[in-house]
Image 1: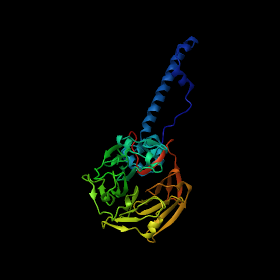
Image 2: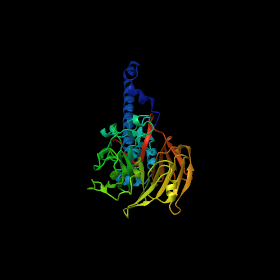
Image 3: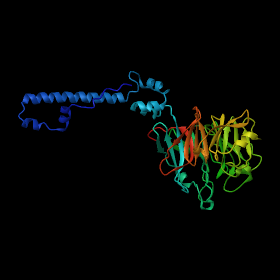
Image 4: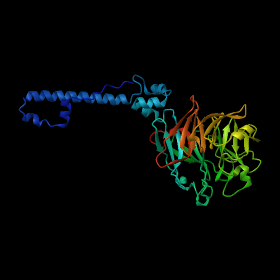
Length: 403
């Protein structure tokens, strides 16, 4: 894109004529015909400068010179948005418009350190390297992160991303009751909130996972313990126009997966989960969606499940060993975990998200992005807004500017 040349050093006569009065000239005894000639010359230069400014403004709104905008947009939609952002203002405006294919951004639940209940939702733009706060929702002020009765334990706020939406599903209120009677949904492309279908038993915590457009809730605790709830499995199709209901699926064989908030990882049309977090001894279960049946987790998979787990495109499973800060990949054919890298920033890992060849890790060091598609893999720290620490992170389409 060629912009008209702009002369940074404007003629002195032009600047003088714009900010001065002609009266001092006449007092100097300058001939009248010379004053008229000078005025005519200044007017001509003023008109030329105005025309140049108008041409520049028009050029600023042209995507590709000589092409209609809708054709130019088709050409530019295949270019990396980070390149478009750095080249021209018109292309920068384009990548944030509703008509341009949205690039992916980080969406994070953030909270000040040691806060009991204050949380905010922010999105990080990887192109402009800036954070934006999401619109607030009244229900968010009821979510509790810590309680005086449980000083050594943080209370969970469980969320997933499905079908391009951010979904909050389980949390606790100040009176230790379930905070969300129905899912709270954020829609990035419109910047709005909505509700999902009512849960038969709202949860304080549960096993929560996603396969394609389907959200699964398994086990967990409601207002009080119930073996019926602890063994339950329900599914909700986020995209179904009349899917405003939870569909009951095959129960777990017991209630051992209700102890704490856990991830049910969607992998190759299966849901994989363990009953406790971290490096402790644990049990594993796998729900086969095609067979609608629960099975024991493979021994090697269970042995290496030593921290948060996520599956890239629901095909390749990764784990971060939270004690050692080691990232590993699961090899299904060998039922074993292959080490990829070790890094201090990965120690204390609490959450792992996999999307588009990158892993987002929430740990005691903050948020780190691991580019596993690069050779060798590299780690990129994400600088958080001042005064906040991460609660959870997701990868979703960016919000258009103006929301």
